Length: 89
Image (tube, rainbow, N blue to C red):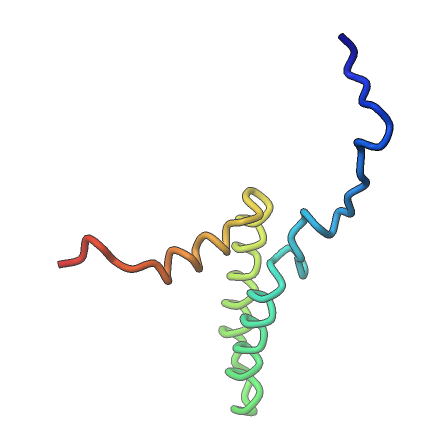
């Protein structure tokens, strides 16, 4: 028995349909939220708040590393945060 498929049973699939949308190695929504909140914290104060920028860069790097290991990491975390707590007293 051969593994050859009859003609017409193969369909090309674009990579954008099964790969996550990443911005600098992080899911797009998370990156936009993180850096918009960073800009909100840094820009209005007109002072150099370097610790916020360093903290955001560290968080971005940590999530990028976790996303490289498991692409659905941030989605699982968001879903776990929204899940009802059934065992809480």
